[in-house]
Image 1 (spheres, helix red, strand yellow):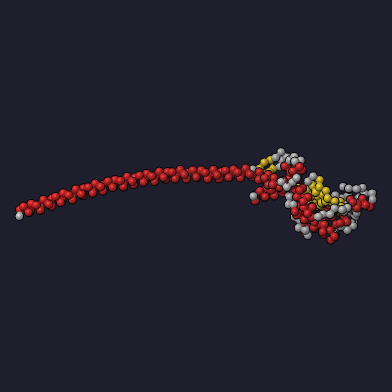
Image 2 (image 1 turned 90 degrees about the horizontal axis):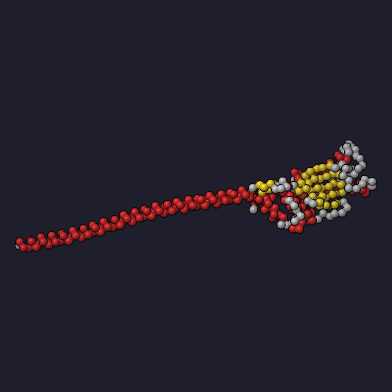
Length: 287
């Protein structure tokens, strides 16, 4: 019995020793795992910190790039809209110059080569458009209508009998077709001014409505201007009414036929440089 007890105690002690050994081994292994986990966490935090630093540098570079891009765009826009005073006194932007070059592509290059200044080129562009629209409108030149283009000024001379009754300043209905064609030409080109000049012969006139040839020439010009504005929708700011009386004859006043030549209304179509460049600026802004 005593031997059995000793054997039992020995067995329990041995078992207790093995379990403690395993426990210590497991505890050591657990410590190593915790240590590795801590190391991994530290490495992760270190990597995250490095990544954050890199991301901050990337964001800073992107901000610089965006700032430089915006600055470049601003400088480009500023350069495009920068005004330049040319040798002939014309003020123009780079945008306007480009828009004008597109317009000038339509003009005969041999003719364009004779343009010495930018203003000359502008006048050629307007003159080209006017001539094109005159051709399209089918103005029929005869002894009562004469069309002349002197450099960039278009002059249409219309006989008195095509527009007015004798000694009258009221525009007759037979002028409607002619004035419609004229309005079509004027309305086709925004960058022009139109001077309507009344001319008389040298015979004097004096009645209760008209004091002299100055009155008659001005009243006739004003009547044409009113008709162009009211019936044919020509913008009034483009129109100028002018009377020349009998002081710019195209023939001597020594015969009935010559006096008839002097009684005329002259339509002078003038390029307007300010309107032209305003239109070019508008065109450039649309591109």
